[in-house]
Image (cartoon, rainbow, N blue to C red; front, top):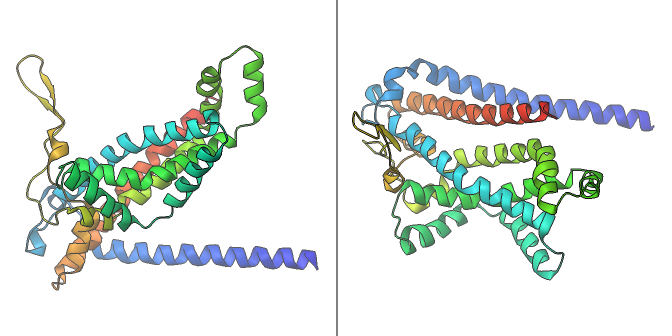
Length: 295
């Protein structure tokens, strides 16, 4: 009887897995078939337009890259540091229990709530307006609980014997955490970061709430510029305070238009968004693999 149940469960699991893969493959095929012909250099290097044949996604994909970079810079160090503190340093008392419960609950809060929070704090109270920095801080709040939880789970997966061996050799708490525990947990931490950033790159509701624009005929100022005079390289962060748009908003704008030509533009935009997501994930997976091979 048990062998029959095991086989039945294996068959059901295989069917469920294949069903999801088939649906995903059909969706990818439909999107690629509609938008592949639109993908060219002109589409990537042109601004949005009222005419579908001349519309592009330059401001959208550049804004997405800006926003993901800002989100990662803000959320990843704070999330990993908070996870390390809660798991390795914080004492187990009512305050830490309260913090842990709230972090776990925040991971399941709808994204629109974070948009309202960003609108009230970053846009209105801090007067950041509809800038890249306001959007990045809003998305950083969105993924921060996920990064904290994944960091804590990764640290828990490290055997306690490793910590005890490090302490026995005379290492301090920080030497043990930084030199032994974190390198062992690095791969699992990166997995959580991949999931968090993949969620952030496709979010639309928080950005619409804080007032991200659907049409922008310019790009945020580049953080690095070159000149013929000393020091030859100039660094500026003024682009963080400029207006922006992102691929999900641009895709939504095109889908809502009645002209059929914009549907091909939307499909091509989805393909570009998928490629950006895959590149982000590939970079994180490569770093995780390189780190694991050292151990």
